[in-house]
Image 1 (spheres, rainbow, N blue to C red):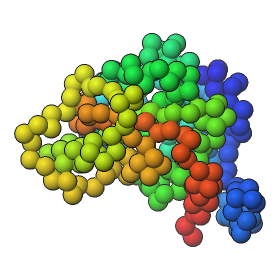
Image 2: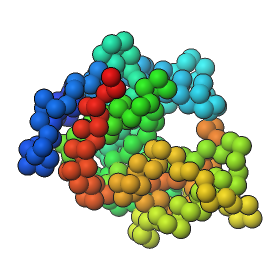
Image 3: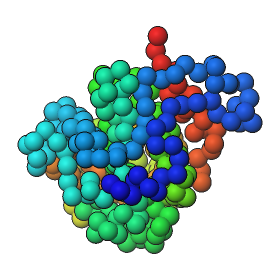
Image 4: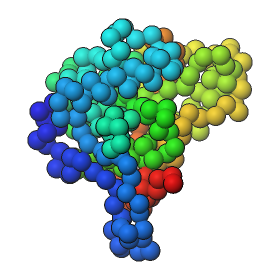
Length: 276
């Protein structure tokens, strides 16, 4: 993790502050309560293991994913190449939210992007160093009031802006447990309404079958996917079937140019509003 300690030019520990005066003039720092969390990049193996432990609790214990590790840690070979964004509770010291970040250069050293295990990425690989991959996003169940995810996103925007990243990719997952018609209907609706231009299309190696399946298009979009879509993300083609996690995975692409500074400032403002 040496790179994360030397190349991220923004603050390593970040607490939300007021937006610039010229963007939201009515808000000042005194209007915003201090959130009981801190956002930082992992700096050592203990930090990374704390993120892996949270991921295991959410993905395996809560969601039932069949992970290969039985050590209580969700880990794979990509972890060693990634930057790990953490939200830590100042009260308990525990990591309560995390994102995994893989830049283009890190992906080259790792042998490719993680999502290349599920999709043929040759078309969007042409975006080169402007591309970064996000993954393994999760929040502790006791901290899902919107504050932690807003802090993660605000920290991500700072990271991506500091590096000049222009396009973000990552898998958006639809849970397949117990509602085949709803999952199929949602997949069909996303393809119809938010399909990427042809130059950004990808092709799953193990497609989730949609043909001949009864569909209920009223199913709700998962919260994380909904957040990406609100920012202007596209789905890049048919979903892949992830048997280990029991999900249909869409490769999603978000152009950073479409995200306004006002929206980022809004995330920081929401993150600062803790419950009393």
